[in-house]
Length: 327
Ligand code: XIL
Image (cartoon, rainbow, N blue to C red; front, side):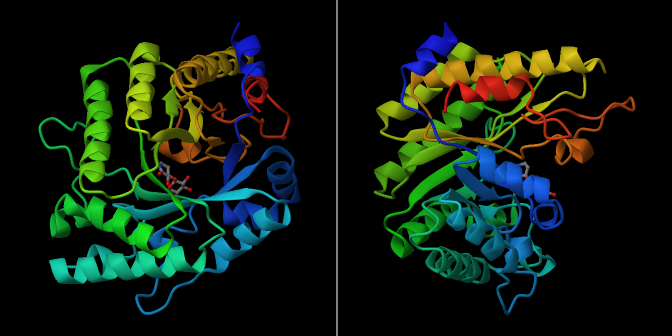
């Protein structure tokens, strides 16, 4: 069975993203992060919008607070993310020239990676650079793509590697798990991107699969396995970086939804892990009280989304049992 297979494997570090506002105001949230996590990811505080609100100075306050907490508790930190087309301050969105974009991107990565050198072991170097439908144009239309072309990925990886040669460098992206030609094309595009970097001798150590799973859709277990195996052949690890369950289309009944979510997560983790154990399994939050799913995937009824392993009162749900098999 899945649980017996899991028991014979080395434990996989488990972690969660942590939101600074909640972290500051809810002691139970801090307690849960401490109790359940081997890995902490600042959810928003290493994004450009948080660090670079003012063009002239960096604001590390939120990130520093979360990272200090992780260090006090002996937890590892994942850095999210050095380059993304979203969460940019207005001045960055308004950049107009190649020179300016390249200068800002390189300086940003130099300053941020250097500050946390030896403390942030893993970086999401680029986040969501693949176009949702990558056929025929693979790269997402962002300020980086518009001003620098596809080379923005290389610039980001090369700079991060130069500043912290020991850091694990990850390409992070979403929508790799469903059975459809579009999703298969996304997986192929990720493989092509890894290959292209390797051909140019640019280090890439992992592909992060966000794994925001839609409860109404099946998992392409075979496709996911082939993907993870193909990455293994390229000597690149996988990690699950933003796991949660989007349950907006499921009936309101709580028991039904929790069973469906746990079973979906189980199917997914089993597929990934049998192909090749991921470096980490990270959820995008811990507790249903706080999740981006509430705003981004609102339900049409008055029921609350239940995307995460703990319920709104911090009680472990079935999903937590599934996650515990891998720890
Ligand atoms: C989300 C956060 O959870 C929200 O708090 C924020 O308002 C927007 O960003 N993919 C990513 C994450 O890579 O950075 C996003 O996080 C969720 C989707």
